[in-house]
Image (cartoon, rainbow, N blue to C red):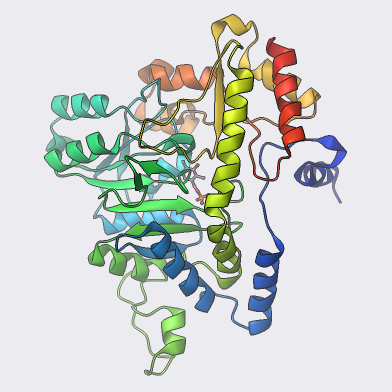
Length: 403
Ligand SMILES: *Cc1c(COP(=O)(O)O)cnc(C)c1O
């Protein structure tokens, strides 16, 4: 086994007392379900994927329909396509996100328009969207949609965003990769009246299928389009073909679709992860509380809290070092690593990456709030398998370095 791989596995197992930044929480139920799927002989999209879709739709509620996909990236691509985004269009989003949020616009020949974040919440700033739209006539740029990202699991100002979208005739596709589960004004993210909401089951997210994602929408036309485009533009999916009366070899291709279906092995994991979503959430919330209380006196900005009526998903616990910390962010992460603790940075703003920077001629100062947040941000380890003792070790390490 190559050295690097061994080190990674050791880290993933938490060997040598190393506390990784994130770790999936897979129980015996998930393992047994995968094994029984393997034994069943049905290992691509089938009954378990269908079950996960039904249970996810019920989890979200309010008449949601759920479409399982092999990643949130695929889901965002399908949702934008189904929302009618195409060549020459633009979509508004935040620079303070993972590149997937914006790259899906490029898949469709559209362009992202970045709008800076509110430095208090780290989420896209609705008043800046409004000002942008007032300055730039929507039609000139063919602005079609807004993709808000609930950064770290803190809900965006959705009332504002939906109101702006309504006034300007824009579609809203929520990137809810961090938001299982989160509430905005007592409603679950997924129930707010957007056109579609996309969740991620990537390995580090709050619930996981290894790789996977889910699109939720209540628009029957979007459901139909997502289902067709998810699997080669075929009007019937593999499971329909297996179940229905018409012979299974007969299908029609109605569009040049994609290969974005979730398989039953991933769905097997997802079925049990979803049932634990609220339990996982309680553990994460308690961890966030403990960090908040233990780090309050240090020269850091603690993560923004959810407003009254909102619930934070606590996918990430992001602190920002203040100027008084007397240490820069990169050095802080190095020292944490020396103490056997893995930290991360969410996110390197998109406008600092070569592709986005050069394609749109962007400068670091174009999005000063995202830039400032990035320079100071550190994501501390947070995962449900971390023991209270492990968390105390992280706290002690942070206090040693900053205290
Ligand atoms: C993880 C993530 C994605 C992509 O999720 P995948 O399931 O890996 O495709 C999209 N947006 C944000 C904000 C993410 O953090």
